[in-house]
Amino acid sequence: MAYRIISDGSCDLPEELTREKGIHVVPFYVTMDDKNYIKENVEISKSDFYKWMVEHKGQFPKSSMPPTSDFLSAFEEAAKAGEDVICITITRKFSSCYEVALAAKALLKDEYPDIKVEVIDSTVDTVLQGLVVLELCKLRDAGFDFEESVKRLREILPTGRIFFTVGNLDYLRAGGRIGKLAGMAGALLGIRPLITLKEGEIFPSGITRSRKKSMDMVGKLAEKYVTETFVSPDEYVADIGYGYDYDEGVLFRDVIAERLLSVGHKVDLPIYHIGAAISVHTGPYPLGFSLVKKAKLD
Image 1 (cartoon, rainbow, N blue to C red):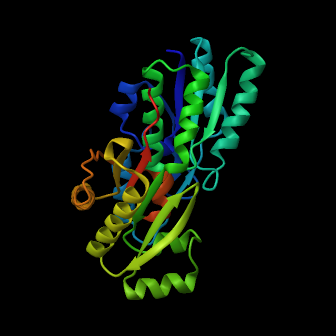
Image 2: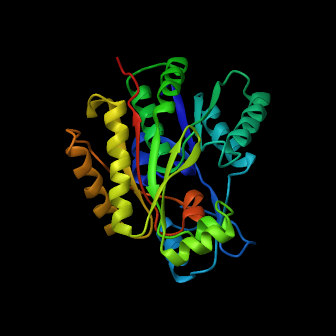
Image 3: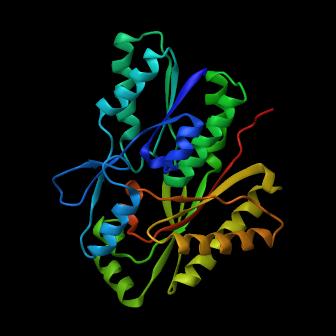
């Protein structure tokens, strides 16, 4: 291969898919006791992590980014194989993974000065980051060289969006994402927020008072964005992210698909498991629709 694709664990792609596509993942760490940090998908599965959250209501786990040594090990493995590296990281607004990967890049140059390493802030996270990584795979497999792949990938990043909702406000309140009083009032009213991630940051997009309504409202946000941004569904890729409840993820997928179909956009919507890097902030019941413009392959 012309280069190796590396992503931090926020990409939330299934392990079988990362193996198939030759994607090397540097995992995040999680803790449930504020003391012992363990590697997600290595020492604890996503399913077991969600199970713990559901069974320990009122307790709030934390996540931690990979250390420099983990990125350096991944870069060194590629360098020993004579491969350049393109590394995709979670948005800098949520984590310092980008800076940590840059530090690993600098250390690699001491021993492998001829290996090229490009670290890219995806400006996104979770299953949308996964879409970005998969677009890079398409560029690599189509034969584009290192520089052209980086250029074409950067072109699509501003188009990425996640429209999502959560089960309740508890985790957002515990993480300081909303004020304590607002969180308490929201909990009493049964409020479910609608949130949009774009250009590396999250923005409030409304509130509802039922789970079903929140799914419908996310569908409306998705419909509005695709009709304003894309002429054809062939111009973008999309997916669905879910938390603890896979069946609810399927239901949400169907709601989104119906919304998009109503405006002539029939799209493939794979369902992926949202990981701990995000779920520690959202709680066990996040649901999200993400999409990004396809990279140019002509």
